[in-house]
Length: 92
Image (cartoon, rainbow, N blue to C red):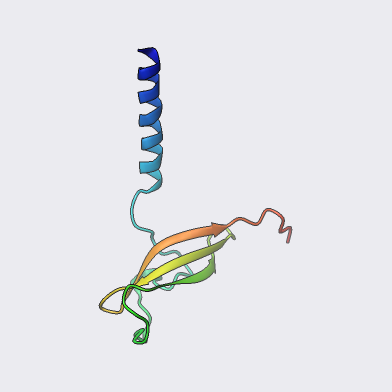
């Protein structure tokens, strides 16, 4: 019985951690294509709707960030993901 209760407690803790990590949409930061609510002036007419592309920027902490955008049906862009490139061996 004690194993079942402790197992449930661990499961609930891990579920809470995952829910906190995936807390909602990614917000643009300075350097993002859609920062400040702006969209590119030119419409992406040749790219298929739903396709994605990436953009590399330096974030506010000086780390390389790779952003993934999706092209919506109205040809606007939605920021769907931001990953950081961790380079522990760059001593510049």
